[in-house]
Every structure is written in structure tokens, then in C-alpha cells.
Length: 137
Image (tube, rainbow, N blue to C red; front, side):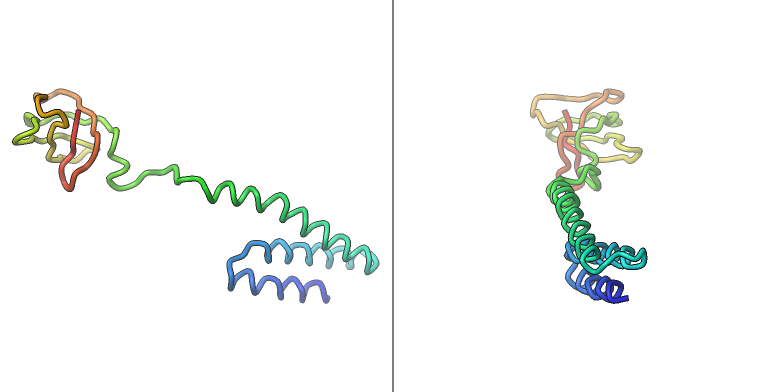
């Protein structure tokens, strides 16, 4: 019974502080409670608690730190449009610009290269989004 109280007691700081180590210690306390329910002695209960807690911290914490440092794999918003192909609908140049169909929507566009002109029907690639204008090559 004391192990379950300890598990709940360790779960409270987990929720309040969002420190996953408290959750791992709470799981260790549950393992100690299971050991007690199976008739293990006090020393064995503490050994199981310590072993499970240390094992979880040693294995889960490095995995969590590795994933925490990674950039998200899913681009959204204008970042998702960079690098995509588009079809020229109206002549695109660097001066007046033009129109393209990008991701099913019509966008105003201008050429990245000042001397380049793209005619209707050509495929272009989006280099960046500048406000509401796609810069294409």
C-alpha cells in the first residue's frame, strides 16, 4: 500500500513540473508494489524499485533528449511551399511578375533572376515566399 501512495506522490510533481524523471520513479514505485503483492521482502521491494527506476532513467531519458533536439519533420505554412513545383498561368518575370498555380491555389509570382522570363504552361520551382508573392526559378 505504501508503494502505491509513493507512486501517486511521485506522480503529482510529474504533472506539476513536467519532469519525466518523476514519472519513471513512480513506475519504479509501482514495481515495488507489485513485488510486495507477490510476497517479496522489504529489501527486495527496494531493490526492484531502484532497479526499475534507474533502468528507466538510463534508457528513456537519453532517447527523450535525442528526440527533443530534432527539428520537426513536417513543414507547414509557407515553409511547406518552398521547393514545390508550380505551373505558370500568366507570364512571370522579375519586373511586373505574373501568376502561377501552386498547391492548387493561384499565387502572384516573380522571377528570382532579373533576366529570366517564364511563359504560361512552363513548370517553375518556388524558391521562397515573399509576402504574398512566390519567388520562382
